[in-house]
Image (cartoon, rainbow, N blue to C red; front, side, top):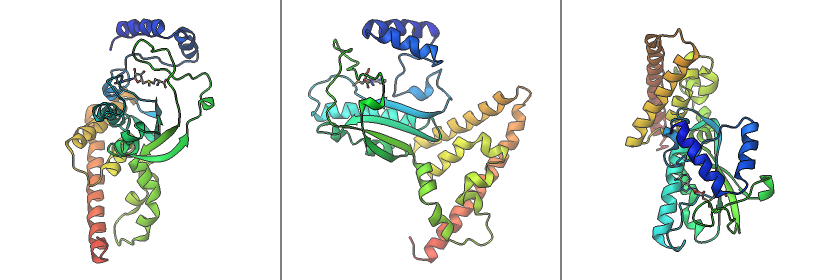
Length: 284
Ligand SMILES: C[S@@+](CC[C@H](N)C(=O)[O-])C[C@H]1O[C@@H](n2cnc3c(N)ncnc32)[C@H](O)[C@@H]1O
């Protein structure tokens, strides 16, 4: 999207919501970057968002629009598709320890959307689910956002905020103890039992932090979606490396890739050894 499109959409928003101008001016003055017309289903490739990473990605009350009775299976499917695509994008736009928050109604038929299951399809794990309180968001008024009554609120009823973290972060914190219990002779296991502590001082880890995070979250999975996101994470590492110092040559980046390859080989050997030991202990 170019600046002119963003400008035209700003005008649409101002016409649609009576308090928009005041609110947007306030955001602008506090240094926020305002983007309009961002599609939640494809936002990771948005020209102003890629390849940025975020601490918090929030979507309050996702809703794909009005297509009939909310309890119809087809309508539920449309909403689920929107949320599923949002999670697929958001999960790849998080910083390490970042969170995705979705506020959602919990009564029928909205409970049929199965938010937690949709998140798990994008390697997101529920961190906590808290009661949604409007008072926690000063100045926030929920809006329909679609149709002729866009600027009107919708009845909230019972609703909660679901907070998700990347499954790799959850796994890393949750399974840390269990991994350490298994003695592995000879191997440099610290790299994998505590990857952050073991290699965070190296240039390679710093440049490829998203790649390592991704490798942990997708371990054992097989999906064509994975290979493209591996490529995304490597490309992101390359862009960060080159942007940090304009004197850098892409050929120097190859050295980092070689280091990454050697770490990946060690990781495979570690996993093979661990599988073999679990097998011996009858753990599989
Ligand atoms: C129920 S409204 C909630 C609006 C607002 N988040 C709030 O809390 O009041 C659902 C919103 O989702 C938006 N929406 C629907 N499909 C979308 C998509 N593909 N990308 C981004 N937003 C979308 C609609 O335009 C609408 O504003």
